[in-house]
Image (tube, rainbow, N blue to C red; front, side, top):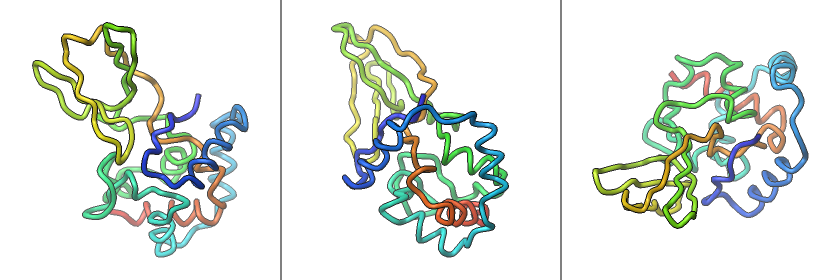
Length: 182
C-alpha cells in the first residue's frame, strides 16, 4: 500500500519518477527501513533543505505551506520541528500513509451511479460535499442526494516514493530544514 497519486501539479519528470518508485514493489519492513535511515542519514543542512523543499524534484512546496509560502493542499509544516521527531519526519516522507494529520484524511465517495471519487473533504454543507484530490486540481462538489457512501481510506494522498527519488543528502537536508521549522 503506497500513497495515492495526488500529483496534479508535479512536473512530468517527477511524476514519472514517483510512478517508477511505486511500481518497484513492496517496500521492506517499514520499521527496519526507518531504523536504517535514521542511523545512516547525515545531519543535513537546513539552508539547503529549504532549497530542496522548494525544488521541482522534491515538490514539497506544491502541497505544503511553511508559514506564508507554499501550497495549501497539505498540512502547514511551519512549526513541524517543534512537534515531530527526526524519525517522525523521515517516516512522513518515506511512508506517507503511516500516519495522518486530522482533517487531511483521504475518503472515497461512492455515488448512487456507482462512480467513485477519492480525495479530502475540503468543504461540506447540508446539500453538498466537496472533495479535493490533488494540489492544483479543481475541487469536486457532490450533491449529497447523489452520494451512496463515504468511506475512509487508509492511504495518504501524498505519493509514496520520495524516499527513493531523493538522494540521502537531499532527504537529510529536508529533514534538517523541517526540524528547524519551529
